[in-house]
Amino acid sequence: MNFDEELRKKIGEVEQTIAYWLPKPEGFQSRVLEAMEYAVSAGGKRLRPLLMKETAALFGEAGGSLSCFMAAIEFIHTYSLIHDDLPALDNDDYRRGRKTTHVVYGEDIAVIAGDGLLNYAFETALRGFGYAVTIDDYQRIQCAMNILGRKAGVYGMIGGQCADLLAEKPEAEVTKETLLFIHENKTAALMQAAMTIGAVLAGADEEAVSKLEKCAGNIGVAFQIQDDILDVTSSTEVLGKPVGSDAKNHKLTYVTMHGLEESGRQVEELSREAVAILQSFDKRNLFLEKLVEQLIYREK
Image 1 (cartoon, rainbow, N blue to C red):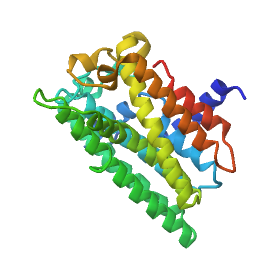
Image 2: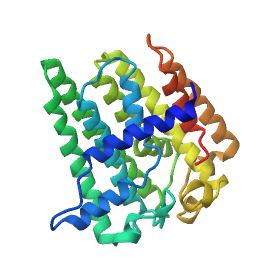
Image 3: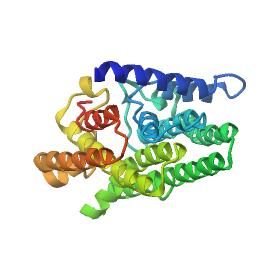
C-alpha cells in the first residue's frame, strides 16, 4: 500500500462529501454563508471525518447516514477553529496557511459564521435519519446524534475550551489534572465522537465502542501534545500558522509543564497503546493504523 497516494485519494473523497453538504452562499444571509464556506474550504487534514469513515470500515457497512455525520463533525471542528482564532480567544491571524475568518470577514461575521456552522452541523447530521430503513438503523443514528451532541458540548469540547480559557488567567493554578482535562476534552472529545460514531453506525457492539473511545482519547491527547511540541520547534512556513502563540498568550502546555523530552515520550506511549487497540479487533484496517501514526507524529 502506497500510504501517501491512498491518503490523498481518501481525503479527496472526504472533500467531496463535505462540499456536497456545505450550503451555497445565496440570499440575504449570503455573507455569513460565504464566511462559512471560506472557513470550511481552507482544507486541512480532514482528520475527524476520515477517522469516522475508516473506523466504520472495521465493522461493515454504515449506510448513507455516514456521509451526513462526516460532514457534520467537520463543520463542528471548523466552527471551533473560527472561534479559537478570534481576538477574544487566541487572536490568531493565520490558519492553514491563509488569513483567518475574522481577519477576512470581520469579527462580527466570524462569530455568526461559527454559530452557523454549529447549527448547520446538527441539521446535516439529522438528515441521516432519511437513510434509515430498519429500527436498528434509527437506533444507531439516534445513538450517533447523542454522541455528537455530548462530545461537542459542555461535557466535551466546549467544557475543555472553558477550562483552557480559565487556565490562562494570571491567577490560575494549573495542575497536571487540569491540563489533561483540557486535552481530553478540547481536542480528544471530537476524535472520540468521530471514531465511536463510525463504529456505532456500522453496527459495532458496546465493548468495541468503549475500546475505540479509549483509543481515540489517546490519539487526541497525543495529537495535542504534538501540537504543543510543534508550536515550539516548527516554523510558520511549515506549520501554516504562527508558532510561539502559546508563549505569546502565556498558555501553559504539556511542553512548558513537562519539557520536550518527556512530552515526546508521552506521545510515543499514547500512540503505541492506541494502535494496539486498533490491532485487537477481528478485522484490521492497516490504513487506519498508519493514519493514526502519521497524524500523531506529523510535522505540521
